[in-house]
Image 1: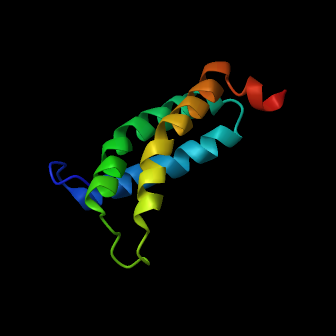
Image 2: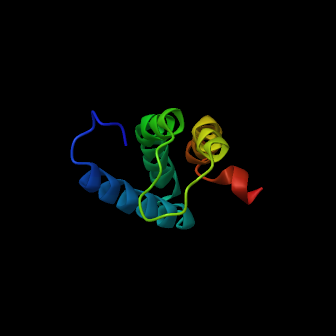
Length: 98
């Protein structure tokens, strides 16, 4: 996480709860659109942290080291994930049902 973001642990916990909630919301047709928009906002919010990890080769303590190319792949794939979630949120999931 970039050093300019305060309360790292709290931010990680909040983003984790948001990610799990969004994933569950995508499974429920009534909540799919709202969950998609929430996940899109989450992806935008965590993108700077993914870029920071790639640039500075930041490793997560307690996990096996990730190769540098994996950190860059994650950061560079983020816009594709954003597009995918936006399509699902925009259509309320109709693309997935076709």
